[in-house]
Length: 118
Image (cartoon, rainbow, N blue to C red; front, top):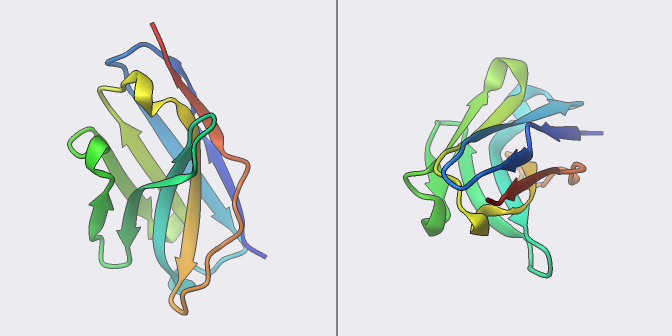
């Protein structure tokens, strides 16, 4: 059973930075096609923020382009989300998720809270 543990969240002022980490266990790195970060703000639906696939190709939510960078360490089964120039609208619980080559998504982790406020 795949388990994901997100970490690195916290409270920052607008313009600040955070680096989120996602540690995956129970999954062989070779079985993972992509890793994604999602977020869910209070009262909002969960939305896809960024994805990185096996080739290293990345996609981003339009509102985070140029500010967020997704990365993964295949050998360590770990993913990262570097978030710069944070804005109040980035406040949310952030989750990572893996997708296998067969299109099966991993269970959700517990998420990590990000609060951007002055």
